[in-house]
Amino acid sequence: MENSGGIQGNITAGLAGRYAVALFDLARESNAIDAVSRSLAALRSGLAESADLSALIASPVVGRGDAAKAVAAVAAAMKLDSLTTKFLGVLADNRRLADLRRMIDAFDAIVADHRGEVTAKVTSAHPLTAEQLKELTANLKTRVGRDVAVATTVDPAILGGLVVQLGSQLIDGSIRTRLNSFATAMKG
Image 1 (cartoon, rainbow, N blue to C red):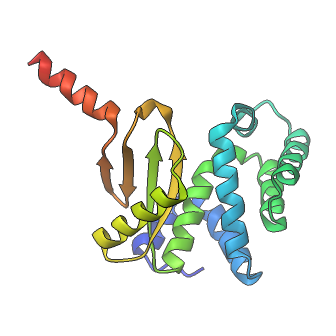
Image 2: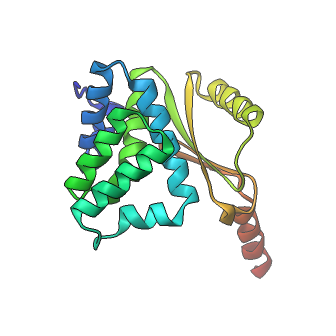
């Protein structure tokens, strides 16, 4: 992939970016960008929901062979596409599973850039419904004047509301932040 600076230059910086670019190039050559995107979205959700999966990718004590077997089993159970499954195997062999979240973020940003979209990372206390996601996407598109790809994560610690990161802009409408601001104001 040609690095033209700007967003692309920021995305591809670092190890996670280089792996994401390699995966994107393979996905593009195989006409599998959408399939890989769906698989990576499923992986992101799996990492958010499963402490065991998160522990597997973060553990430095799991050997290469065991990690490769484990991610192959996870990929089969989650019905991930073959390219993503092979990618996970490479990460396990190279002991790079700990960087998987950053690679997913970088891949999503590359795909959004490829499609002329802006990526918004949205954190909510509870999973968003399809209708909420549709409305949020439309509102963000109006705000930035471009198509917006929304990557969602769930973090019950924010209590309610949303935290939206759109490029370098952070819009924090979480109840946790509001309560913290109120507590600070009360201290006077």
